[in-house]
Amino acid sequence: MKRILFAAALLVGGFVSAYAQNPDPDSRDKSRYAVNNFENDDLYTAIQTYEPVSVAMPKGKKVKNIIFMIGDGMGLEQLSTAWVVNNRHLNITDNFPYVGLQWTYSASKLVTDSAAAGTALATGSKTNNGMIATSPDGQPLETLSEYAKSKGKKTGTSVVCRICDATPAVFSTHAPHRDSLYNITAQFVDSKLDFLFGGGLRWWENRPDGRDLTAEVEAKGYTFVKTVEELNAVQNGPVIALTSYMELPAALDRNGAHQASVVKALEILDNKNGFFLMVEGSCIDDWCHANKVGYAVEEILDFDRTVGAVLEWAAKDGETLVIVTADHSTGAMTLQGGNVKEQSVAVNFSNTGHNGVALPVYAWGPCAEQFVGIYENAELSQMIRKLIK
Image (cartoon, rainbow, N blue to C red; front, side, top):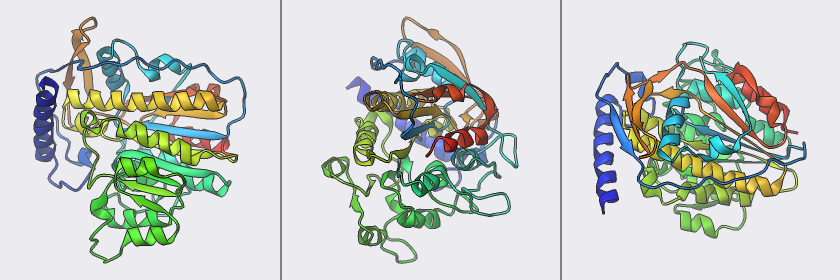
């Protein structure tokens, strides 16, 4: 009961704060409204912890599958905070032997947004803030998902936000601005993804253009479902699972839905030619924008458990490269205090936007050693592309 009440209190406070800072409730570009907002330290103590998995690196060098995992807004400061809360152990920190650093600035600003950073990660080219897989002059850029499909691989995307949000959008769609939500959503009909999981039914149903996107994808051979239970019953792809009107519920209320979706994705995508799968821990960013460390930490821990599920599958496969990183860090958060033994943290958020600090890149699997070093976010994408064969 305490956990339910605590989570409810955080949820109400978080949404009030988020909407107060974001005049457009439909926009996910919360950094647009960022202001300096120095507040008292935000405190959080572990509610529940888990043991990370322990997996051995495969001995082979063949990369058949690539799983690209992005914690939106998850800088080293956020990860460090979650590490303390989970008794100084995470799947990310305990299992990845190779670590690099990526710079995040966009073509238009030192401090990127998710659209520009995601475009760099998805296409290997920097662009202006707000643009979705297009160059600064508006030309479409080929994404890793599109390139993998051209090489005969299956492709998938699994997120906990709306599918038309910046990060899932940049891997499968193209638009001059991230707020073109109906246009972006409609492009998923022709994306040729074999697996798609997330929220965003709002832009899928009762559209102002009158299109019935469900009927359109079903005519193309997709199975379309609206619950995790229905998704679990699906045997073959392609499949689209949109289980929420907007974003999925907060981490403590999802009951492992994201882990279940990714496990199902691996089942459906696995084939002799390999696959490319993008997985995003989307809402770390939301709660850092709202300056709510408790919800942010729980989102990181949920994402880390998803990483654990991926590693266990990849260890059995032996030919899967797993890359974990972020698009930017959010909230200018600093870990200022706490107690290691009590698994508690005291943090300060100095703003409600993003920053331009370099981000860690964690690599596991065949060819993981190639990702050590310091490079641009666009170069990270280029390195991944070279391994898609």
